Image 1 (cartoon, rainbow, N blue to C red):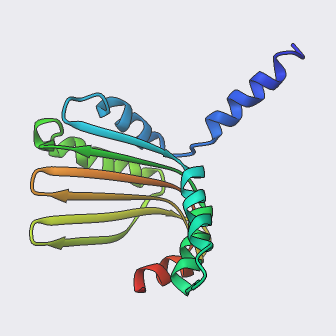
Image 2: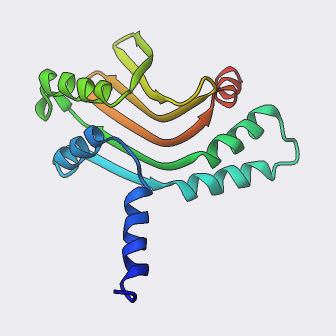
Length: 164
C-alpha cells in the first residue's frame, strides 16, 4: 500500500486540478465528439506563462499588470465551438444546461444582444472582490461558443482590463 500512496495522491490531485462544474463536464463529454464541434483544452500553466512574458515588457502599464495578475489565477480554460449548433442542440438542451449551471451557483453577470449576436457571461462569485470560474457563451448566427475559464480573479483587475 505504501508504494501506491504517491500514485493515489497524484491521481487525486489531477482530479482536483480542474474544478469546473459537473454540468459543464457532462455537457462537454456529451457533445465534444460531435462532427461539427471543436473542443480545445488549455492548461492554466500556459496562460500563466503568457502573463509572465507580458510582465517582462518594459513599459508596464496598468493593463499589463492586471493581465499578469489575472493570468496567475487561471487554472484551466476550455473552449467548445458548435458550428450550426441547431443541428446538434435543441433549445431545451441549452435551457436545461443553463438551469444546471444556475443550480451550481453560477450567476449571470452580463447579457448582451447586438446585431444577431448574443453574449452571456456567468460566474460563481467568491467574496465581494473575487470572481471564480467564468463561463462565456457566445451565439452568433448559427454558431455557439462556450468558453470556460476556471480560476479565481480579482474584480479590480477585471475592471482595469475591460476599461483599458
